[in-house]
Image (tube, rainbow, N blue to C red; front, side, top):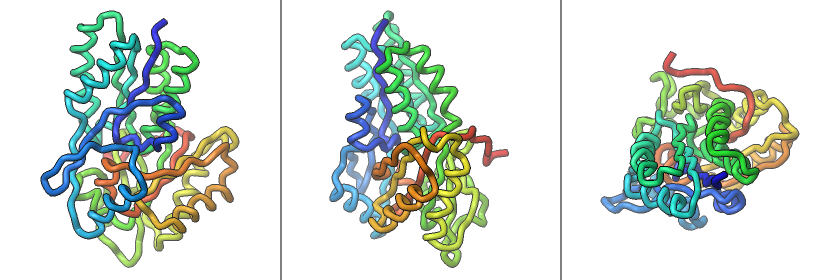
Amino acid sequence: MRRVKIITDSCSDLYPALIEKYDIDYAKMSTVHDGTQHPALLEWSEDDVHRFYNIMRNGGRITTAQVSVEEFRRIFKKYLDAGYDIIYIGCSLKQSGSVNTASVVADKMMREYPEAKIFCIDSQNASIGEGMLAIEAAKMAKEAISSVDIANRIVQMRKNVNQFATVHSLDSLKKAGRVTASSAFFGNLMGVKPILISDAEGAQAAIKKIKGRDASLREIVFMLKAAIKDEKDTSVYIAHADCALDEVQKVVDFVKAEIKCADICVGYIGPIIGASVGPDAIGVWAFGEKVTFCASK
């Protein structure tokens, strides 16, 4: 049976330690600032993170570009030449067109490598929610499960990714066209903070408003706890857009107090998702109940 390589993209927000631990590769998207394009790398330093988010804090605009045909061809060829089947788990099609681009490239390359299989999966998630699915796929690949079976299992699991995040405002998401919400959610209304989920269709949806930053940090943890089925076997992931260290620690402490989980992983929201959510966003993720809320219905 052929070996299986798991590939994701810059939207997955996998921390470097996780990329290394699970032997995952990713296709690079790009950011654009002042007319200069940069690869959206997940292996960035604290200084890189501060510099990136300070551009936005100071009123700068950072835009993004999805994975190019050339990048998909490069990364697929690398592993096809090494004898792998490939599973690419990409950002939700509600937020990026990269899965469609990958599918077109994959169809052409499977004609060049007729013995190989390439599966391009819409994660129906973004940020570490997408990354969590890549981690689960990588675990299966290490157990020598076939690419067909891994792809089928990931499709079945993707609606069990639960995300609860909060931002100071929806301004950045609104500018990027990345959020579904009624007009009542937009703007900064006397310290009211929106709570965001990745809905059943993979869209970022504002579903609740909480008064005050600390209360919103507690609320995302409470909502995650309610969604988790089996705490002791669950990993909780925390990702943030250059939040103050004391705020990140508050969320870690809330998780430790409320959820008796197997472990807690903490890292940064990467440059692609960060360009959409803006600085100081923070979220928590875990596998749990099936997500059924759909903002479009």
